[in-house]
View (tube, rainbow, N blue to C red):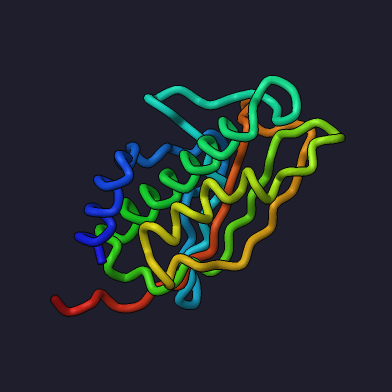
Length: 158
C-alpha cells in the first residue's frame, strides 16, 4: 500500500508535507475501536497556510487545491501515527469545512480536491462518506479545514 501511494503521489507531482503540530489543546489523531479520528487539518503549500474566503478572495480552483492540501496533511498525519500506511483499510469519512461567503454554494466541488486525492492514493479504499459545509470563518483564516475518520487493521504481510 505504501509503495502504491508513493508512486501515486509522484505521478500527481505531489509530496507529503511534514505532519503539522496541533495549534491548541488537542491531539492530531485518536485511535479507538479500529478507527482513527483525525483532527481538522489545515491547508499548507510550501509551508504557508492557504487563507481566504471562497466566493470572495479565493477561486473555486484555489479552493480545490486547498482541499487537496488538507488531504495531503491527513495522509501525512496517518503516516506519522501509523509509521507507514499499510494499516489503512478504508477512508471512512471526510468532514470538509469551507470558509465561504453566504452566497457561495460550491462547497461540494471544493471538497472534491480532497476526495479525488483519497481515491487516487487509496483506490477503492479511498472512497468515503463526506460532509461539505460552508462556514463564515476558520482557524487562522484558513480557506478550508478537513477532519477524517479512517478504518485501520493489522499491517499487511509483504
